[in-house]
Amino acid sequence: MTNEIIKTYCGSCQKETNQTVEYKNHEIEPLEILAKDDKNLKTESLWMVGFNIWQISKCNGCEKLTFKHIVKTERDDSKDIIFQFPKEYARKYPEWYRKLPIKYLEILREVYFSINVGCFIIALIGIRTILDVYIVDKVGDVGTFKQKLNKLVEKGFITKSKISSLETAIDAGNASAHRGYKPEKEVLLKIMDIVDNLLESEIIDRESVLIKQKTPDKKK
Image (cartoon, rainbow, N blue to C red):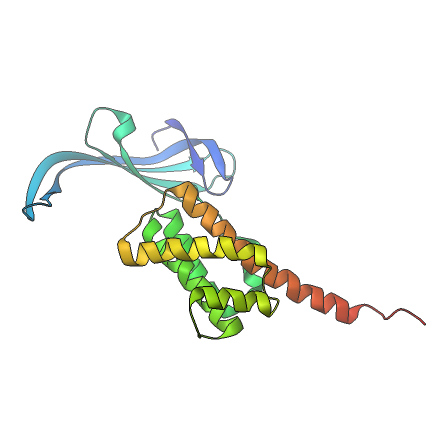
């Protein structure tokens, strides 16, 4: 233990806390950076010295541990590359997901994992997959996406006002899958809002049916 006190994110408290450094070590190693000339398709290796810092700290409140691997390549601390576990999530996994059919859960876990580690292209392709599964489950795999969305409205699964937002999410997913489009974090989270809204509506509708079934009929 070093007795050093730092302020860093605690995955248990879900906020920055004062933490005592329990273990700290460092090493120096060469780092390879690949530089590519897209015009001539040549790849060159550039080498630089990297300074690795390994650190384990304990929250002074809940006493949970946090691990950090800090890679320094410059004197400027703002340029450090930091790997931390547990890390602050870009988006937390909603509790209501557990009420969804199992066919959605594995895809959603991978989408949320991709969002939280910064793999936004993969996350967006996964979002498109979720929408594919939802649409095919409701109306079958027939026609274009536009026709399928209209079918969802026709059968009462979504309102007409939702077509535009779902088209936006599907178009973005197609752009990632076919053209390597990488959305900004804020854009990706808004697209995830569209999907969450759709799936949560599915749960609310199902629970509303159950409530109606258990509600006594009005006495005549």
